[in-house]
Length: 598
Image (cartoon, rainbow, N blue to C red; front, side, top):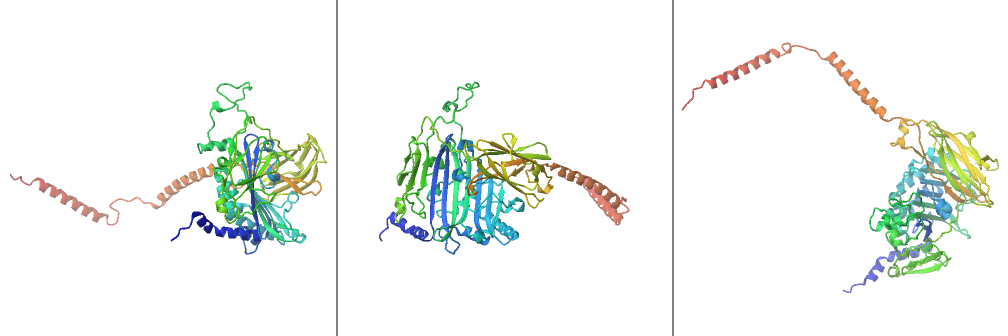
């Protein structure tokens, strides 16, 4: 019997993938790419992007059937789901990747356009969508009820192609869960939606230990209809994973899973500090660009290319690295370089075709150490935004938002959206907008306010602002804190309640459509909290008193004291007991008087 060679056996085993790849290119298409960007402070931005196209029909080669059935059952025509953890530091890292449209607020953020005849039907389908997505992504999306749902008016516009007739029947609903922890349970279902399931291609770098150890990370799923010029429409799903990795922390995991600080003799200390001494060190940041590689940052190299991904065109690439021009870069074999600019170097991974098993080699990128550090030019965002709580006490409070326009020659116009829980009751008459400490009526262009209903819906506030060049706007308002029922407090009530981040949508001056999105940090609100140990103390004290009082009174009323002779049958028992005692005594005496024998 003749034995087959290993490469031939491998090709025969993976032949169905090749057929599926050809079928995918015939009906649907799938593409993936990775962007690596160097950030100040020895940080690396890694942005993964996966695009899958499909339809609602019975054929699903690339587009996941599980998600398509959920969208079809709930009549959702456009979906945007975000899982975010951490805070994007705009002052240090500059403009957010993908203009902020792939990142949400802290926790989970979801908004969708649902087709329905009226609001009640839209709410029912919105609940169906939340419950189904909750099971699909192992998240608590089913807790997005009416108190956490709003209907934005000025902040969001559909990103897909919808006919005018359908737009009239679409209802926009938005919900947030700022307290939702994002973990590996959400990453695993996310990877299962990809054609290669994280086993090959760029998605093979995604590992929960690296992703959730990042300084900031976001997972995004956007589904929308896309139509071509010939009128052919299809459903497009864009999945993105963005993270900011600390090079020093990631490289420190080579020797130990738990990062350890370097010895003091290996640190570059700032000796110009007047309080610097031999037992203290204030490290200098940005002195040296540390060396790093993909296999060291993510724990593994890219395992070839996904066989179901389409062949990149002259413009499309697999991996792009945005670094300083003077910094060297080394790549492994099995790739082709396409230089877009002096700072942007892109690569195409080979391995597509019937013999992709042989050509599909691991891909790695290595950047050596560079000293002194290179200066990276960062593009500032359209607006710098920060938000904080003001006031004191457990009865009233306030919110202050600081909005700064960094441009020196252009005016920025945006919509500021607040989604507050029902137990925060803002006073609209206390809303004040000041520019450089002075009231300016030209800043506020429009206001939409929807008050809250206790335990039914939250507060929705949208303010459209126009900030002059180089100016800083302060937005303030006051609110009352409601007293909750004791059953409405979480187990860790004294920690506080998470308030969803504010959403800032930058508007285009001509089309008045959103072109950039910014999320502020979430807030931690302290409400009047009762002492939950008091009910326990009251229950224990009351139970003790009731037991003593009831037991004493019951004994007095029921128990009766009588003599032993008065008990029925007591005389007979005494006689029998007396006879037994006498018999035992007599036997003992008889045994004691028995003569001894020699």
